[in-house]
Image (cartoon, rainbow, N blue to C red; front, top):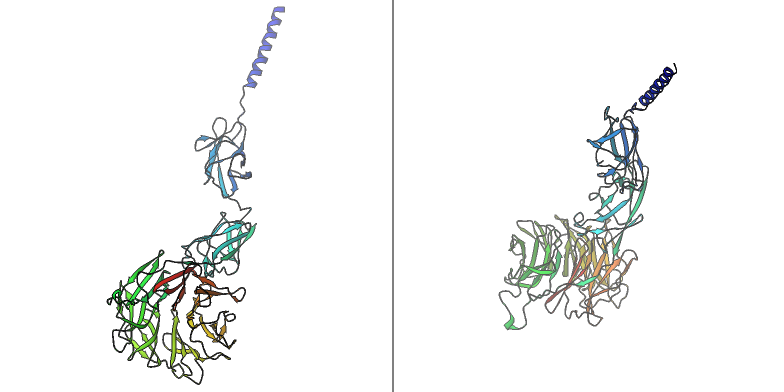
Length: 594
């Protein structure tokens, strides 16, 4: 009986143990579920802070800044026992690297790799928390005409400074800039496109940078700082002896300087070359060196000649032809690598004081003195029309003539000889030819209080914006001395003076030149014979102080000076580089300003 009880106890215990083992071996399988997703800064060097995604159903959306997303580590949370794969590769939270440049799919499965659920991860651009301009420049190619070289701005906080040449035209510049992805850049409400949008930088320009959702913006102020230009000696041209009258001009197409001149005939008979002496030559200055574009290509040149370039860069030369009788004017042009005569000779009697301007290749105007009168020739591309200027009151006997112009008009400045008209002593005229007819901007004018218009120290030029500028000399303010006076012709038909008279007393050989830089700054060059050694001086009108600058001396101190008539010539290119040339012992000296 007792033996049976023992077996019953043993059997009961065995059943209990079996039941316990059965309960412990039953597997719990959690369904696939991804509940959290993020990118932590600790795992991703390109991030400066953690970014947490939003999980909605099976869509995971996260916004990241503009960083490299090709190798990011995600941190995620799934149900216990779940297995996660991307493209078949098992993922480990906080460890596995993936490319998130485009959407990728996380496949979450249960512990048996069954019942897969796909979660699509979409990475978008987060609004820039600190929108800014990170780079700013004026690319030389984008601003070829105004600058010709790249200028990079210096960014200090919200201020951007760019150093520009002293007299560069900064009214139409194209900026190249960088900012964060998704940011919008505007100026006065106008959206800016890097490398495309044009702005006037005469005053500081405020660039507003706004982030993607418009929640944050920042203003960056761009200021262009003009750097004071310097005059520097350029290589002297002495390959051929240069005669007085040489003129420098800049090709409006490529900014290459050209000079045309008559070859000087040496005093010594055995040094002369009758095949070349007193004939026209032309040279250009390229890459720091002078290059010939024509040698002895004309007939013998008399006492007068002039040179001009058309808006397309075509050279024209007018000269008193010493090979014909009477010595009338011949005009030549350069095309196809050769010089040729333009039409027939101009005039019926000997000519002098010859000047010309080309409005276009088929509209060339020559002004000169013939038979003590102003005589004009106009080339229309096929023939010359000649005669006087009907609009010139009384057609008085001229003492001197100068010309200037642009692609729309030609202008003639002339001084009447003595009291040639209405008892006005050396009155002067400014006449305009618009391609069809002449009109007077000023006729027989003498400033009140002046004894006469000085017969030295005069010149005329046309600024890049078409404004006519005139420099003359008079003694209206000091009867004992003559000083330079600069004036400009205004749009309303009036003349106004630029600053005060220039503080220099004109000498008998003060053949001055006026030039206007691309930004509108007026320069005057003149020979100073009151110093030793004599030198060329240049002043400019400072728009800020409303005063003429202290003179810059060209050559004084480095052994360069002049002895006779320096035969000045002065011009600026479109980028603000200035060129002054003069003669010394039949050599062509040149200084550049930039």
